[in-house]
Image 1: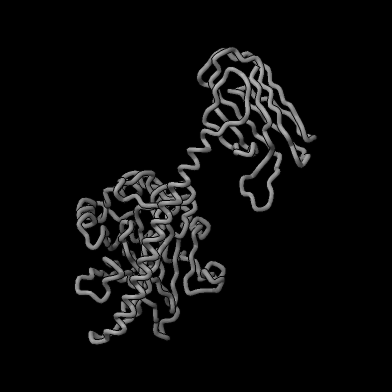
Image 2: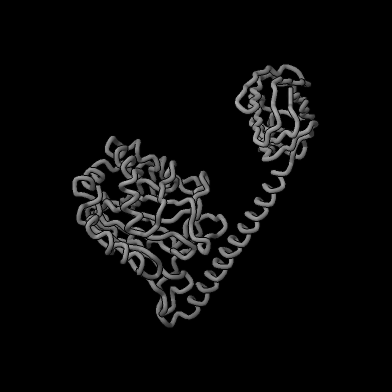
Length: 401
């Protein structure tokens, strides 16, 4: 899929990536084999207003198809190919970042189409996949535009700092979005990028800015690069002014200073929230239901301080004496009907729930052991509005005899 010429230059590409300024990136022309890029262009989906709804609920000038496998058979094969080891290994060699994966949902990625009026404020991207918790590490932008004049706008820009727009030390690079050009850049807390407003002349209004956007993640990343979970943070482009427009520059700087302060406060608050969540998880891990017997419970999941349990409740336990049975006393306050599957180690028992109070008993011979697991799977749903815990029943006591 990747052109042989590109593969032959991987070491040079990696060197360019590692030494690029203002942050690691590389531009690779003629990235894919010619037949691949032609087919991607041919099958590119038409602009769909339903996939162009912006944050205000309105149809905007940007259309995104995240489910690229549904576009055509070729895009389905392409979606599979970019997730395979051969492709991922090539990107790892180009960037020096190992263990790359693409998220299942392709959240925010896929095909992007921008028509006249579209623009992308300078920003840094969200830094975690909310589904897996993996770190966002790379963006890959593959352009599919047959003809594109840089004067129309839309050229991707990477900059050193949005506070430096009016300063001589601003580092800014701009890359036109031409067909089969690939831009790969590292995503971190200073990978600021965006593009200016697109204004396509009337005679070319049938054209649009087209690309495929792929985001890569890793399970781990260097500790010095780890920040608290945050969303994408934007800085609007400043107006172009002459050198003597000091008042406009002052007002823009004031705006940008306030935005940067908000960004830093978001990072600080996210860090505090992360710490509190870790403390809460630590506290919850020591929380156990009421029990009797010569056992010790640990790693309890799905249990709360008010004795409610979720539909998936589990724990591990150590028994210092032989256990012949386990009795579970529960309270079903809403008198819901349902079923329980109780699993002690590898042995399952099934019970029906039909009234408010139940005592379930399972019998066996469990000699003293340090490695036991206990789980209850329930389809009883006692959830209430405003409480997102997915509650099922109340555990009154667990008795190990």
